[in-house]
Length: 127
Image (cartoon, rainbow, N blue to C red; front, top):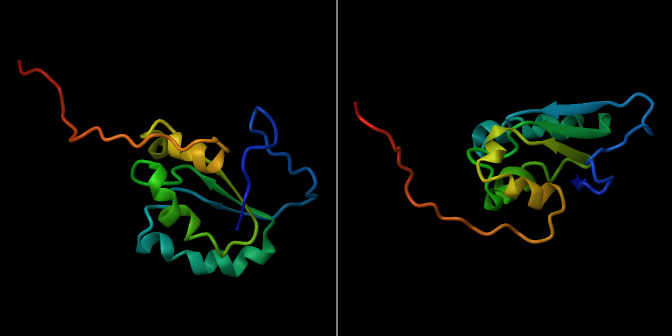
């Protein structure tokens, strides 16, 4: 897998005008490293040679985009895809402040700190 980091300009634009009539694969909400995600991997690998790149459009990592989840939920499932992979974050990638996404896919130099927020609670008021 060729991971294309955002090194194509400050605005994160990736210019593929080099491709006259590109053929590409689009995947979205690629799940959480479970059987539902792995079920489509053989088909992706089967058609890989017919494409120039893949775009993951939204929710690269479920459930919360954590930096430590990329190995099992992004790198391993798509390691057999021999073309560049581009990604656009979705709402689940923002749950950690987009730190996992920017570290792994945008070339952030240092890993984000691990945050333990403890158990979640709902703050409200009874009337």
